[in-house]
Length: 328
Image 1: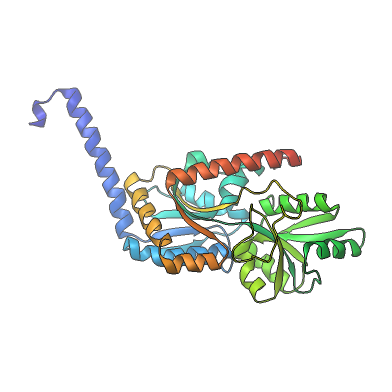
Image 2 (image 1 turned 30 degrees about the vertical axis):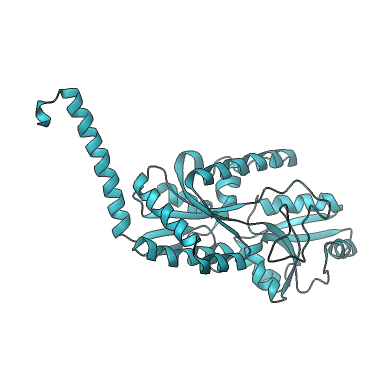
């Protein structure tokens, strides 16, 4: 019957059948193979812990193994480049926060990837805030006490750890120094885990990072969170003021967490992963666990995550430009 159709129509149908087969092939591979969930930071940090929590539940929803693969280094750049190079077969995903996806392309001349061209959003699952914390060996118990302590250490000089160079925390160190007229220098690490190790060992007296990086040690009294960003106090840290309360406004746009796939990944696979993520995020035990880590949990569709990422990039593009920072 098909052979009796006009040649042009036969070609169109053949193309449609081929595309459908490709999509179903990608979906079948994603259903039968092990899914790699890339993480751009070392084991032991907040992002790694979040990824392992979700991977454990996603494997049940997808009916296939989901393995967290740490590609640490360069603020997630290595993991992002790994994602770009991966086959678009639905078997490789990247769990990332704002730094790799939104900030690196603003601070590097050639990060080796273009999120808009090389990646596709699968779905978002949380937002969070950054904070300033001090080590246990630092006597300050409030922001005003920390400022006074730094000033007492010789010409107002201090060093503050950050999880990655040219990151939002590093820019915040600069802004905090300007606000309080302190000579603060950032000390970049390869992820939050080694920074936290030095803070716990009192090798560095302060750090700027995310609430998930700090919350467990703050609860244990090993470090102290002095101030948080965002438009409101955090439910998990109601006694900690926002920087806006302390007179440092303009940082109310909070970072996000999301999952991304290589561009060209079959839409059927994207839809399947996104639906599984939505179910996992809605689970009470998952929500409670992530909330206890300092996240504001909420599913975002691929379209919502894409819009969130672009808005966040625009906000920080203006802040970075105003700081005088030149892409490296």
